[in-house]
Image (cartoon, rainbow, N blue to C red):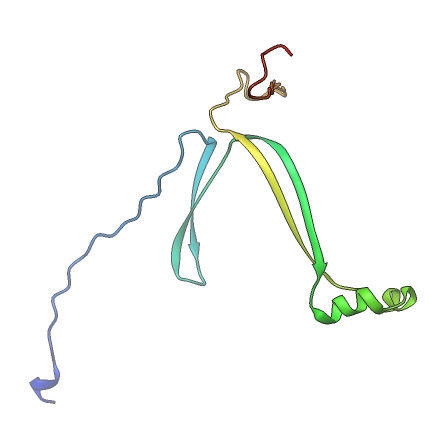
Length: 127
């Protein structure tokens, strides 16, 4: 074997890292480091809570494709029972979040009330 086929490389450790900023308003924030065998890398999972209030819930529903739309429009009821129409459903939930709200006794049940006043611009207050 000839020395021409052998090459020497000097390796050194190269430091790498990642930083993810997390809001200080997360309540009971937890960090968990997991090994992801599929991607062969570590994954950091950040979990926590903020207080929120449901504002609006909507569902948008439409037939899955042109054939399902045809069935929905033209099939008689008995045929729709035999071959049900498949729908795509999108759910949209809107919530108001209160990231700075902290209960005085965090481990007990409680509620809080939010008062809202509305007035028309250009109208005197109180009318």
